[in-house]
Amino acid sequence: MCACCRLLSGKEVACDLLLEVKEAVSKLSGRPPCVVFLRVGNADASVAYVNQKKKRAAEVGIRSLLKVFDSETTTEQMLIDEVKRLNEDASVDGILVQAPLPDSMDFIKVINTIAPEKDVDGFCSINMGRLIQSEPAISPCTPAGIIELLKYYNVETAGKHVVIVNRSLIVGKPLSALLLRHGVLGDATVTVCHSRTKDLRSITQQADILILACGRPCCFDRFYVKKGAVVVDVGISRVPAQNERGYVLHGDANFEDLKGYVAAITPVPGGVGPMTVAMLMKNTLKAYHLCHH
Image (cartoon, rainbow, N blue to C red; front, side, top):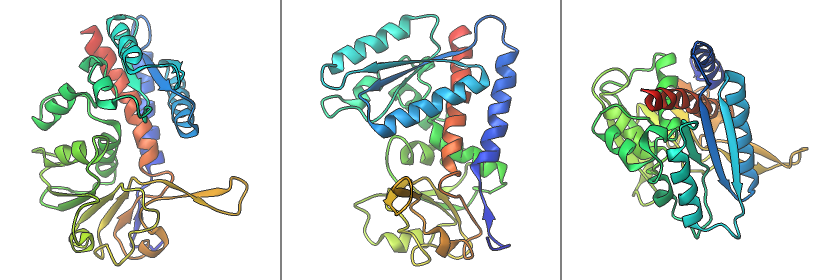
């Protein structure tokens, strides 16, 4: 790594956040916070993601439950009915529906059934609406994690041009709202790009802070990035390789090409990923307080 290029590792930041959550949980009187994960089917990625979340929950003292539904026999209404039941369950503080759902189910319809105070992913329409209005809300984990990462490494956003290559509910839309807020880690000028953006390169080259989340491994090299920019790489793709696992993980940024060219860059893996899970634990603790007060 070039001396002039900082590595924005999320591991240390996530560790600090998890320790804060663990300490706060240990001071609670009564039962610990409880989050329920709902998974439909057994896709490898979904299984791995939920297992990682359950592991982190156990480490910080949060109780987690997993409910698995058969992808062939479970209907959208059955899943919604389970969410409604959990909304009324006073022993449950957080509800997370693991994406993706089968094509026969409407993810937005399902998550909008979650009570906003139990919506630890922060995706329901009420939490998203509050976020847009800069009102108190549970913020989506990945955007909130990116903000915490920038804060930890003292990356200023005020007056900076931030380009986000993603317009999804999970990353692009909520992150743009967070960066547009008044105050610390806000006040940015934000451009959101997507698959229909014309001449993408001319826009990404303007970015002081470039946030990538489009699933195009190693696509963004010096041809797309301004010298001295900060690059936050949210993308993660499995690229076939001749190794024991049969693949390697790559982000959207061409890390090797950029590491001596940009001011700072997140690694993949080990950058934004750990932050997402850490923020989920923080959101679960917040949901616990909302449900009890």
